[in-house]
Image 1 (cartoon, chains in turn yellow, orange):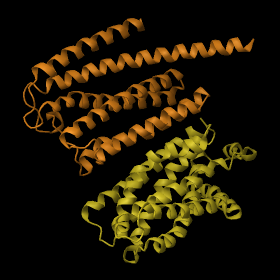
Image 2: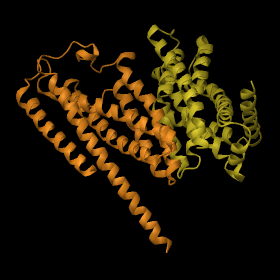
Image 3: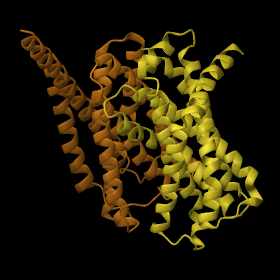
Image 4: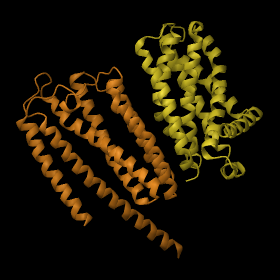
Length: 226
Length: 227
């Protein structure tokens, strides 16, 4: 229990800092709105075709906006050598990582919940029938994105060209989770029930979350400390 | 000693490749439904299998580095990944040539092909990241972690042919539960796997030698700049 309590202490610190400064949330919500606007120039936002690709659009927005949050996750600790202080504290690398993942997960979830109504209005999408299932997909997809994204945030924090390296490394890794989330969201948004061959994507999402959570917890000490 | 090994492996690989080319182009008949283009398979499959094997060998080398902290294993992992990346690209290109003739398009957005491309992007990131880190042990640690994560995706690629509905042809070899190829057509495939593996091993050894020479030059340069 103390493992989770200490991880939560790190998460609470990050959340408190984010609530006070709002630097990641403001930037990523604004960025998400800009992407939603830009999509409307690429195709007709009122056409029926939008329903078929709505899941894909939504997750692309979340992935792009999420990178802004993930980029700041470890980079904000560089000022005044806070990262060294955190590593020197009694909190283990895995606890520090899990705390960061929880904080990023909640911040990204808040961004997603802020974007959803805007997306519904802009693109005239109705998903009231399957809102809870969609929420489950959001939680699973979101966890996948934040786990792998936070690990890469830790890996790239001290690299040259950090802002370039993170998206270049993290997007190919995220793709299985994004594929699963996009497939399921597209079906749910179009109002159709989940067919048997969509179940595989649920399994892909859950497997991705479990495998990469365990791998990341096992490897993060190597990444952060050596 | 290493030079002799490189020359020996290269000669073996070269001889075997020439003999294989003779068999594939002059002795093996055209496939009944696909015609002459099926010969692409003799290069597509061996480069796919051997590059996947090398990616895993590189991952094990990276794991050995994490255990021993000996930079030679990191250098080996990097060299192996470079060669594997080149042969994985050959797999993708030969697959595209085959797809253009049989399916009529260069690129089908099929899970197997897409996930293979994702693998290449990941390893491209691996090389970019290596260039972005100067401190050797830090570079080795991060590369090892990335290699392990990427290998998980390779398993997804490997299994995707069975997990997902895909346009990619199913297993044809008897050892993977396929229907098997006609007598005389399967043997050159395995011989080409051996030839490419020998070629890749010699390329890895050459690359490792280049790396050690590069390391020596850099240390000499630092030594000169110190005065």
